[in-house]
Amino acid sequence: MTEIDINLVQAHIEKLDMIGKMGNGGTSRLSYSKAWRQGQAFVTMLMETCGMTVERDAIGNLIGTYLGTEPNFPYLMVGSHLDTVPEGGSLDGALGVLTAIECIRTWQIAGYRPLRTVKIIATVEEEGTLFGLGCMGTRFIVGEMTMEKFAALHDKQGKTLAEYFADNGMNYEALAYSSIVPDEVFAFLELHIEQGQELDLSGEPCAIVTDIVGIDRHWITIQGHANHAGTTRMDRRRDALVAASMVVQEVYKAACSSQGLYVATVGAFKVTPGATNVIPGKVEFTIETRAAHDETMENVHLEILKLLRQVEEKYNVKAMVNERRFAPAVHFGTTISEELSKAAMDVKQKVKKMPSWAGHDSKIMARITQCGMIFVTSLNGISHSPEEATRWADVEKGLKILNQAMKRIASIPQC
Image (tube, rainbow, N blue to C red; front, side, top):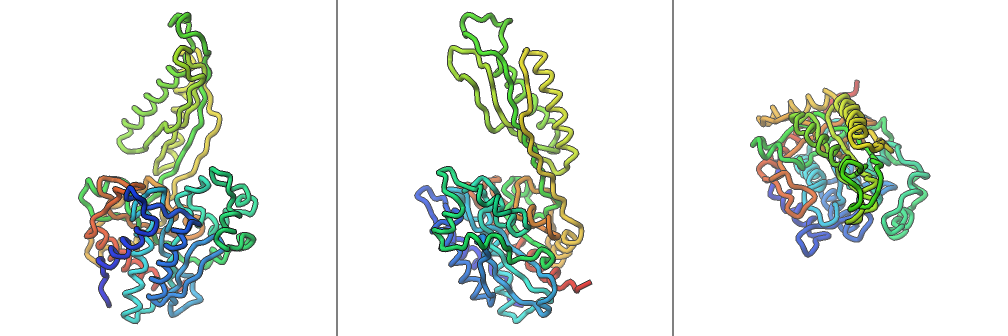
């Protein structure tokens, strides 16, 4: 069997990174842009060179098909996304696409055909940059999106998805029909940089992902009373900002004390009226928690409610949760995780097991099929940045696991 060529993968990453390269060193390959089209053309060329037939589905996901000996069996899908955040890095998403293609390249040269067909996918709009909706390409695949939902999408300038489609010569009405039938997908695999620092700090080159954490978001308002900052005695104030500050501090301290069980972030904060000489009368802010277990997030939610009651009593304010959005954690099943572990043993590679603290296409695909993920190192835990980097020796180790796992999973017989 032809050996994996990590130098070739690195060269392809560097070429793809130049498509959409910005003056600050970052790359902007936003979905449905000129750079995105050029990126798709480059990836199409790589897929076709490896003997794959290539198509683009209605929403813009690029799919290369490598036929197995039993093409009627449900197929293995492997890949990640091709879009970037504005002025992002070279590895996020793209590495998962190009490493999967490298596996097929070696198969094609060796004349190897697995039992099951393998489809390599480069998904669209995973980052959610345009419309604030992440993983749009895989949401389309799993059947979550409707024409009504598509019609409601628009970017910050008011440009609609239909207008983006018109710019690209794409058929907007075709969104009513997906070319992928969920029952025909046997499993989904994704290799990705960790985007965190656990692997880098531990010295482990790669990991098998056990879960993708859930996300619990709260939109909170604390209502006090705005008044003159000079004429209102301190003991008579109903300062919404002071009350909100207590919430922020307590949420932060509790998350620190959890010893890694969950993370919590106050990421948006608005003070009204926001004047130097006026006591803040209202504060609106968000609290986001992430954890690998839904029970943990629910317990934190109850603690937040308790904290708000305490704040009301202490500062004579009204504290309320206006909205809560809860996305449960995704636990990858044992079948694919075991195949990944066996693949690691096959190539004599020790692996760490850990959850993913960021969302990925695999989280959405898990709604219709069994999924697995491999993480490789993010140096200093940096991603979504021109400073995004990895150790290519680590990528090579993760790639060998991916290659072996693809062979194992694509060779599982029909039950």
